[in-house]
Image (tube, rainbow, N blue to C red):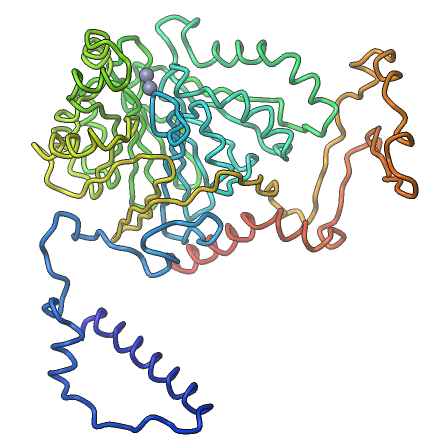
Length: 481
Ligand SMILES: [Zn+2]
Ligand SMILES: [Zn+2]
């Protein structure tokens, strides 16, 4: 029969086996009865199901959980590995108005070949990456759709603390559009950020930084519609212009392994979106519900300001549905929206005016999409409020951990007076407790440690992503042979 009934049979067999084991320990085993007829078993266990999946909603064509998901209802960070052929997309920030359950926009794309990409890095979104157990030094490619601060506000933190937390061996590369003049391009924004972070960067130079400070900018010509932004390891990212009041705003499409993901960034609905996103598997656009009079009251935005902002900058929900119906993705999602009960139903109704296919909100923060060529599934991720950083993740292919020599020392960047005012540790540490203080960097050149000499816990925790990548690459290679 079908795989569904096979699963049921397996479950029943496992349950019976369990019963037998338990009953062996009980003095009086339950009596064995005559089994029911096959028809009765099927009639009861398959009640309501005609032997195949029934079809009564909009989601069922290829929309269902994969067998490797630990829970079909929720994603718990750190419990599931991205599969070799899989694309996993997580909404790390979902609103233009930052608030505790919705940080500013950011979408994280993880591929089965081990590659990881960040699309926009709005204010506060970095906290959700931490909660999702992503090490900051795993985030080496950030694609900015445009330079509104709700799309790049976490970048300074990522650069500084990502470097501190092990971003020593790979550059952080910021991909983003040019502007009509150089002043308005991504390069200039990054130059400005460097200036803003001057003190912080020099202060953090007492730590190992390696390549970390050497931030790269890949600025593309915003007018070069369909042009390639990135192409490596079978991954290709292209861009196109979006109408978002000012030149430079761009949409992105990522293709890998016969699957495609689109993030439009902000903008008015456009023919270019249809051209470049057509037929994409996962199409994500921003969306504003057509509820200006009410929402402006709720959000404290005067109606004329709300209306003017949407009509010059954004995609109304009706238009989002219209675009989806032109593009016909396997899964349509909307983000960069207030996730509020009073407007969620309304948003769905407006999208449904045109789009009758699979649809989910890419909001609030933590929504996760698992996607293969055949299946797609959307769940709520459970992100803790007080997570701790994941260990830095290193590529151990060379069999070594290399800790670069810090470029500077306290002596070089701090006058002696204030250090001399520090209280003698003997005065506050209790009798008999004398920690070995690291007041100076303990070595005078790069520290190179063979993998075998690393304590097991460091080797394991720092190499998790690398080992998964090796495993997945091997599986992909074997499949292609
Ligand atoms: Zn925005
Ligand atoms: Zn914007």
